[in-house]
Amino acid sequence: MAASLVERAEFAGRLARAAGALANRYFRHELDFVVETKSPQDYVSVADRAVEAFIREELARAYPDDAMLGEETGGAVSERTWVVDPIDGTLNFVHGVHYWCVSIAWLEGGQRKIAAIYDPAPDELFTAASGGGAFCNGVPIHVSECTALEHAMLGLGYVPRHDLDKNLHLRRELSLAGVAIKEMGAGALMLAHVAAGRYDAFMEPHMHPWDALAGLLLIEEAGGCVLPYPGPAGLLQGGEVIGSNAALFDRLSTIVGHNDRDHDRSR
Image 1: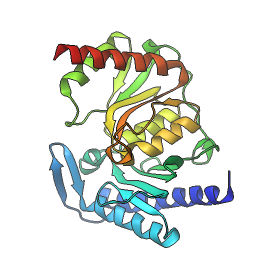
Image 2 (image 1 turned 60 degrees about the vertical axis):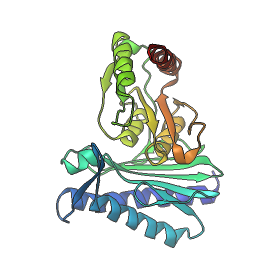
Image 3 (image 1 turned 45 degrees about the vertical axis):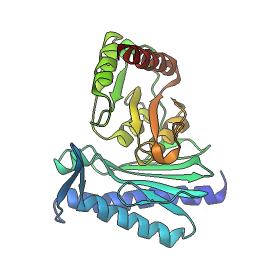
Image 4 (image 1 turned 30 degrees about the horizontal axis):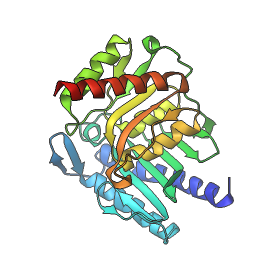
């Protein structure tokens, strides 16, 4: 890896930890925050905005020529862009559930180059730089070796903007194939856990770039497979996500494809 990429990756890791420490102060109610809703079951809080503002300030100081795209305050996309979710899993966060994270990705020329996902509860920092492997707290991580769907544990993301009937049908098809399905409510963190081999796969019909980019790079660098991302509408619109080890990827993609066609025919 080029020296500049290593330096940026190390910076991203430090920044994710610092942002997570700030978010954790809100989570522990050391700092007060007010919760708002953007839509049904879609929460935002002062904590989200404060953490994103902190990240934006640090990035502007360290890399003033880079752009930043954040979940809460938007931004621009350029040749070099940081894509940030200050608190992924806000619904869990505001309910006091320890399953949320800070997610930071860096793109160069539209390509995923750096990932940093920090989970404050167990103090785990997941990092990756293109071509350099994936790590948790500096220790190399790899996707699972599971080869059979009947032995697999999969994360299936769902939010109200997704098609409910389609989601329920997919859950049925996966269950019939023997898959154990979990929905933990923080897609970025579930992608990191796929990279670490804790879950065998994760899929969601649509993810925004701030939720998806860092986790997808982690899975790739941990030896896994992912769907091309973003979708045809481009980075700002996001797209469908499937990430898993190589042994399960084709079978899962086939099940999703069949589900899509069956659902379309039923309409």
